[in-house]
Each structure stands twice: as structure tokens, then as C-alpha cells.
Image (cartoon, rainbow, N blue to C red):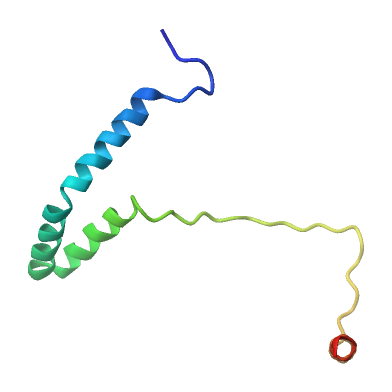
Amino acid sequence: MSRTKNSPNKITAEARALFVQNLASQTANVQIAFNELFECDKVKYLEIFHKYSSFFIPKLTETKTEITTTEAPEEFILSDAISFVKTKDNATD
């Protein structure tokens, strides 16, 4: 029998918990292996450490932002912008 839509997957949750428990019990062994690999081959150490860390550090995703306007942009005049900022600064003092 399949589970209902949007209900938690109990087997996945149990498997994940078991994996985390197993990983936690291997912390000392993982540290020893990393130390040995570091001594033997620093490049390989960095490659493996990078892969290992990807399980714990969230990956950045690219976000595309698009702005559309129906109005033509105004001409930018630097002196006007400076005057505007000075006016705002003086108003907050």
C-alpha cells in the first residue's frame, strides 16, 4: 500500500536517522583517515574533504532577477544625485 500524498515517508526518516547515527559513531575513524590522507596526498585530501563537506554545507544556487519597466530611464546626473544625498543627510541631522 502506498502512502498518501504529502505524508511523511517513515522509511526515509528512519533510514536517515540510522545513517546519521552510524556516521556519528565513525567520527574518530573519519578524522584519522583525513589526517592520514592529508599526510600522504594533500591534493586528494582537499578533493575528498570538498566532497565530504558538500553533505553538510548548503549549496548556493544562482538566482536570476529581471526588472522590467515601461518608463524610459531618466538621465543620470551625478551632481543631482550628490545634492539629493546631501539634502537627505542634512534632514536626518
